[in-house]
Length: 165
Image (cartoon, rainbow, N blue to C red):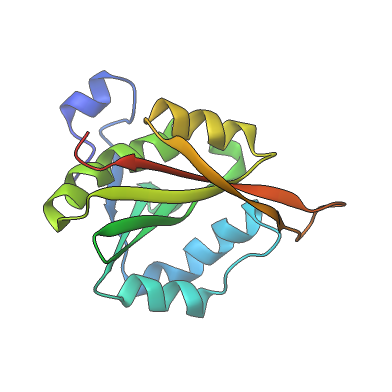
């Protein structure tokens, strides 16, 4: 269990909560969570293929057997990319995504990657605040990148941080 006494004492989790590696059998639950947060949600088959990939770290936050948040990280050529992170709507803003990022960092260091990359929609203020708290800085933009579920296209903000920092 990654949710240890240190994390629990900082209010990141309860000892009945678990951050664990996802298995292919978790793909349907992860896809359902993804659909609650993204207009262009990924299919269970796509998520299952990623979870099964040897260069993907898939972590989930589970309470009472229910998957409430998950994150997928993909390693390639010395960099790691946060592919997606999703939290159940009722649990957003309660530190689950941050706990997943915190749990992933030591695993990514062991994997040998030097940078963690991500992109985030310009209008996703809560995610941008989270990433800033974790030391991510803006590297650039993809103009008008996000279109699904929006009345007008939104820029993607490209961010990174050193993994060992």
